[in-house]
Image (cartoon, rainbow over all chains, first blue to last red; front, side, top):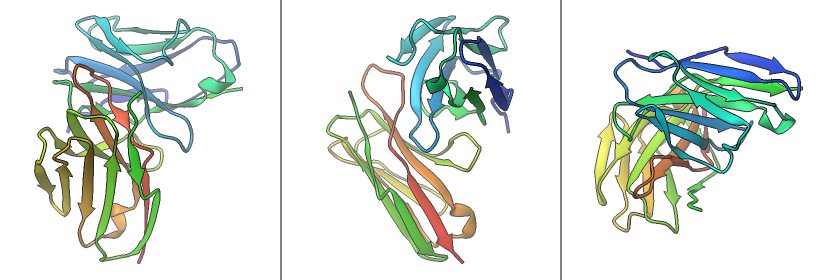
Length: 112
Length: 111
């Protein structure tokens, strides 16, 4: 069964450093998403991406965040200057339609 | 903003029992979805509901999209150990792509 692949599975970074989280969505999918889940809490929407541009973003997705689909297969989330409160599981998701999409296994980001 | 209130927060049951959990909102939702999350993994889609009143089954799982479009329930019949995990309801509102998630129901099963 096709999967959404995320790397790395765990990233530890110093506060203030830039991080790039990588995702390979399912190949024939058109809609791409990033969500995050702070430990023990619910999953929160960050951003959706369609047709090579951001289609929707949340209040969490401020100027410190950016997304890119650099080569038609990868989908990345960049956090420019990480803060302690950015520590969370970050999930990439993709779908052929805007409903019922597939999530990856996540990247655990720890900011120290 | 839109919020989903999911209950119960946790359940402790015996293997073989049936399980019921639900989600409610003060907002109208276009779709309702139920996900299961195992430790260290991403949410996995169990059932998707697209029409008010829709009742859908997936094996031992049954979910319904409430007539008012403000609620949904998920039932699991004859629970087995691999049903352990956190179950999330999620929904979309008209004109939005984002999924709004509930707080989750943690299911624990005693063998």
